[in-house]
Image (cartoon, rainbow, N blue to C red; front, top):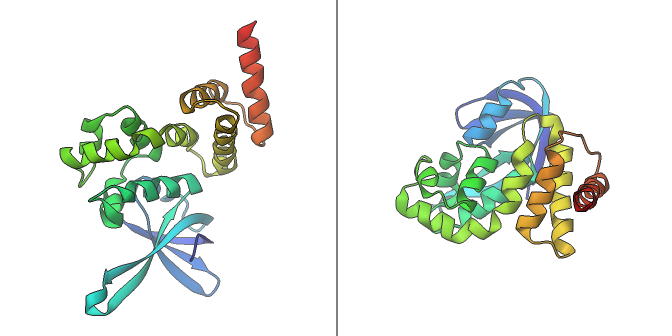
Length: 210
């Protein structure tokens, strides 16, 4: 299974892009929010975290392999969860993802059915199903992708994700972990790794207790 692909960005179309990897060119499907972020990266080398699946009807004997690309592992993880909702699936999820993951995850966490229903292909009934199935999983995504502007920030986004899991592992609730990290990230400081983030979290907490 192909989980990551790196190459020169040749073209960005409405629903896919083309990457040159060595002697090969790969067509990779992308959601709209990713297309907007990549359209200014033409001829640059980029990396996409991918999902591979087969499209078609097995009964007709024709199955076409497809790749879907995301700019970070956390976006890919969110998409996997979104596809798990009854009645969604890969094609509908791709069409629906016109907003950044942070915004969609926050709307789900806050049970904003109107915002969910406004996504392409997602009506009121499906919006309620999405919220019911995914709401408790969303704090992680609403936090981690909050700083998703430049591609260069991918390392920090991954470190924030690891810091969130580390805080959860030592007994903090999802809400507390998210609150503490949001407070630290509001400083706009660049953190090199998870250790620096955790240190800043506890310095902030200790300072607030004085």
